[in-house]
Length: 190
Image (tube, rainbow, N blue to C red; front, side, top):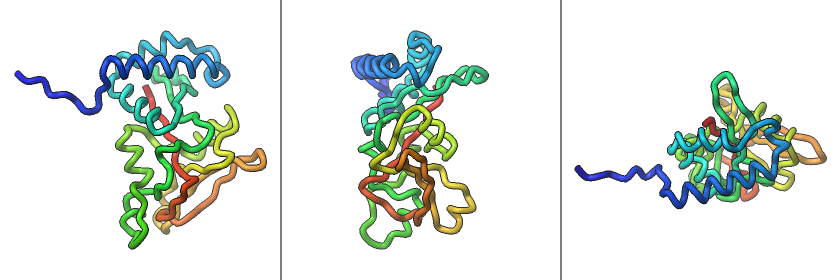
């Protein structure tokens, strides 16, 4: 029987490198997850190879994922992209596949919803984005698409957030718009 490699699986070397990076970030930013122990987070990660792959994709695209919540009820650790600015490898994208399809010219390479699905993460909601902003100052020069309510999306719009003047702002745009300084942040439950 031939072993077929799962493309969403990391090599041992990649896993070790990712776990090292995550541990360093975890220990450097204890204020994001007071009272949590890295050993317990790592143990959970090691039993979820597909989640490690998603975290590696978050890392590879510039998200700098870190634990921000421990959902004790579900027994899960929740990672958010904690890069200072919107992840570099996920910028210049419109909101979703419909928005991408609607562009007749100068189409972006991709859209936020499909990229998040490919990575295996959820785009942050406005509420999650505001929670993240309580942990530091994020997106002071960039902005991030957030999960758009169906009624707004149905009318052709999408929402994004950023931090300016020490305040978190929520704005709107046509879902088909894209900018070099706008990407998206995601969350992953492990």
